[in-house]
Length: 209
Image (cartoon, rainbow, N blue to C red):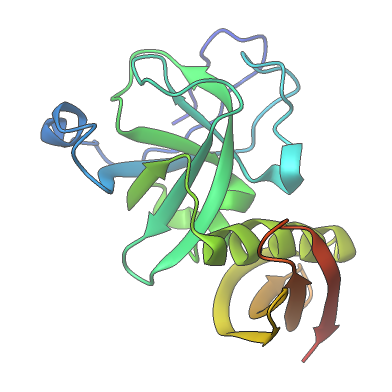
């Protein structure tokens, strides 16, 4: 089903079956570490309510309900409980008349959770303003670098490999990414070394496996 929310472009959201949202998750907003909800996906459009493009951070973006407390530019950590994949998305738009626990992800973000867009709706858990380093470096920084390096591919899955501390001011993290194009599927390993105090990147590297 295609829905047009009146923002000047067709906001394409795919609902293959009726959605029933857990209202208790919204009522327990401040008390839960994770909020249970559902994610749909969209291809986005040229304009947004936040004046932040859907392509921001390589499409790791989302629209939230106009009834939710989340603001433009805020980050959300979204988790697929079926495979434990986590990503960080930025709020770029809002959708009226939907549940406060529904998040409309860009298709690339939906796929980065390891979900097939054909399912249309995905049960998720999410947190506002995440601070987990593993998600920050693997689910955002290296993910963005990988997507920029492979513009004709999209990330369909990623896996945390290891985290080490070579010296007191260096932390090294490694992640594997699965990328898909119309012709092939490849795996890429991303490595980032950063200073845990300043959070400045010292070096990074990506290579095909």
